[in-house]
Length: 289
Image (tube, rainbow, N blue to C red; front, side):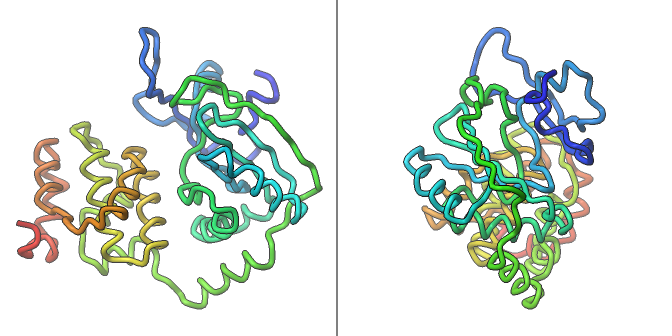
């Protein structure tokens, strides 16, 4: 492996996870069945993986539309940030920024700081956490290589005062944790899903992600709903992010306890149903029928 191949293997990040996933078809297309921690991987596995978790010192701006690039780069240059621009291997671009001090914050605090950058640049909100294509690897969507096209070095990046103000405001408001918010709304299955891996293949991504998107959008402020939704599908490593856009655009309100319970039963997960749906006052309401 050369330096570019191990771009993401910095000291202190060996606990981060990587994955091999592909949407394109072909006779020799390979996929992994599970995530692997970097320090548990063989050299061959490190070389074939194409997805990784975001690093603790990293902010990534994900541009789906190429026409956004000029405006975003102008903003970055005006604020003297150092950054790398990568063509994603799909339609758009990934802009990587490193902030050494970012890793000193908690996971939720990093998400708030990242959200400030994302709002300022009008880029993909899902990159407050989650996954990204590994540098110099094929995109899991197209099999085209993610390539570096520009690098700007203006020295060490510092978190802007405005981003820190947003973080302090959130601390003052003292918003409950993701899990506490979900408990307040009494969907014990979604609460469980935020903290426990659910091993099931029978449409896990579709059923859980769809209902989670509807549930969060109908019970929380939109920005909090987005953060909760992306937390859940990132943790479960499944589900299509487009469910959130669909639920928001169509103004869906038909959250279905019955669909979720049927999904658990189809997968034979009666133990999870027993500790969640059976004990959930929300699930006993008429709305679940």
